[in-house]
Image (cartoon, rainbow, N blue to C red; front, side):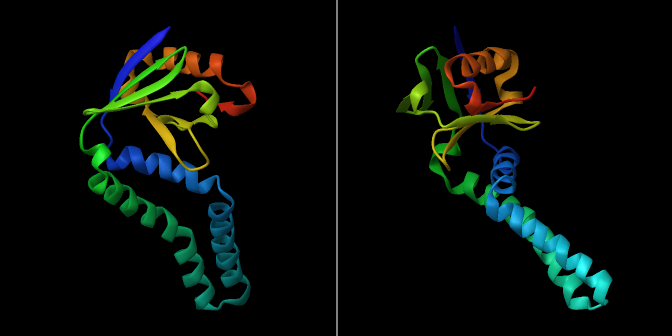
Length: 159
């Protein structure tokens, strides 16, 4: 089986990845919990500084990620043109202009999904982002290939 598709990276697609990555990490969760605790602290003590600090903690990360996603898409040369992905039984090949890179399935770290994307981690931070809208009719084939060639413990994809 083989699936080919092109991805045009946009700030919204990058933001979707960054939100998922950040808010499933320890620091992202701690930051949000701290913000919520500070807001609760305001209701207990009626001290406005707790409310202001809590709101800052809760809203800072998503807003900062939004601007960082836009900046990353604009400044990263790889995203200046469409990325062509080929997913097959040997692994994943990505081509951008004249540059071509391939990874075999044993190099994949984990696969997860959001409501908008399938994210295939090639390391703890690096990932291939497959927006569902860009995969189009080959989405099910891509998910089937990932599920077939990766350990089920590494795959957490929901349709």
